[in-house]
Length: 331
Image 1: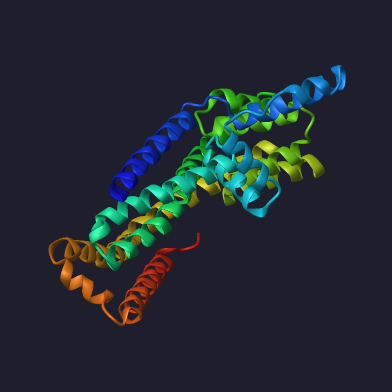
Image 2: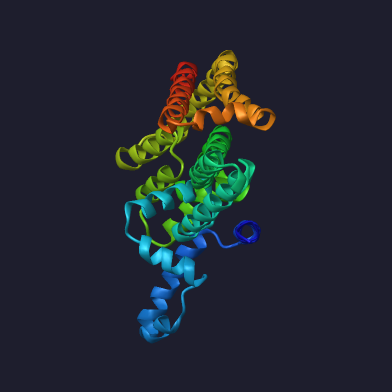
């Protein structure tokens, strides 16, 4: 009976997780639209009074609204908001935290049955604990991966964006008109980000603040150089098109050098990943082929075997980060 309850619970959790991800990925409202809605709601409240806004019920389920309310104002919620904006994932901190809990529970249940279930003894409980921990951090790993992909794509589009901006300024466009042209002509994600900048300026936010918000969403050294050049030109004057043309050449050369360095250090990077994953794969293969051999780690005294596994995991992590650090070369 307990086994059946766990199986049914795991299936329900996986279904809810799939439904939640489907709703999130098909949601059309962007972060800019939400800010615009809040702005319009404030304007309506000033015109018609606060009774209409008070009658509106918050969107989302009771659980996500409760989590959003509990997490509001905390450092965790602020950090999650920044990460979600950088990855362009249209979720609220409470919803993302609920996904973390669901993923942790689902991975823990899967790892428990993979480790032998109720007949696996201490090994299955250890697998379940490891599954809970890994599952809790899986959404963050996905979020970080989406951030890296998006920032990398943005960096690749930045030189073409600067060429378009330089041509627009030379044709007589103002900086704001050039930003509007970028938001219409360029592909995402750079068009999405500059559309946010343009809409923020339309709402009355100064250009310096809008560009600073853009830099917070896209932490890039090349973009920082561009934003600094635009801000300095607005304060002291100068030929912005020539400055941006020089920056474009610098960015293109930096991208070329980074590509060459990545090619030369690819062997070290992939060797670190392979050598770090190899002990884990060997442990899982031995668990499936000769479980009694691996169970020697959990015999009395259990602290000895678990301590060995813990130290091994720490050493694997240290080796991985050291090899990745060796492959990193600042340009």
